[in-house]
Each structure stands twice: as structure tokens, then as C-alpha cells.
Length: 127
Image (cartoon, rainbow, N blue to C red; front, side):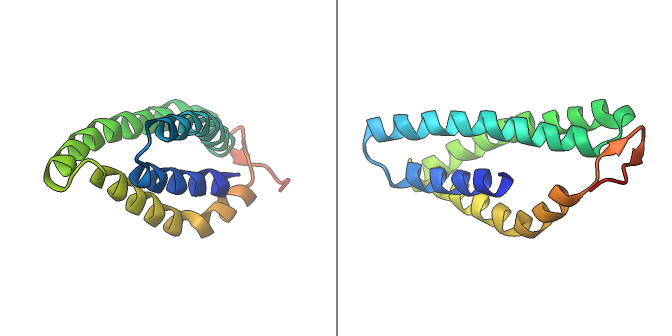
């Protein structure tokens, strides 16, 4: 499911870059919102499953700083990129970044999926 979600993100970024119709962009945005909900649920579940209980607050706050800090930085960079290279350029940059990210995390995702959950600070014996 993680691979499907990340692949969809790559597809949505390139779809935004290529579309010239407002209604198509609206449909993509709706799907992107749905995807964000699913990805948030999956990533939170994985994080809570693999991080010891006593560290979950710290790990979640670092994740939040990364997410919201990334949004702020991304919006600023997107504005500069659009000003220099045009309105579709931020979507092309997002597509390239998402594709590279997918490429780098494709294999490690199988390790994440097969990792044993942490119970009381110790990894459980069950797969």
C-alpha cells in the first residue's frame, strides 16, 4: 500500500504539470486529498507500530516539524521556481523529487513492512 500511495503521488505531480483544464486539476486535487488522508493513516500506523511507546511523542513531533516545515519551505521555493521558470515548473520539480524519493525508498519499504512491532520497548517475536 505504501508503494501504491507513493507511486500515485508521482503520477499526480506529473498530471498537475501536464493538465491545462481546470476541472481536471480539481479532480486531481480531490484524489490528492484522498491520498494524503490514506498516506497519513499508513505512515502514522507504521510509526506507532515500530517506535517504542516512550519515544512516540518525540518521533511524532519531529515528523510534524518535517511535514509543516517542508510545506513552508516548499511553498517559498515553489513561488521562486514559478517566477523563474513558469507556473508549471513547481509541478515538474515536485514530480522529479517524488520520483527520486520513490526510487530511493522502494526497496527499504519491504524492510519496513517486515519489521516486527515494538511491544514495551522490545521487538515482538512474531513477524
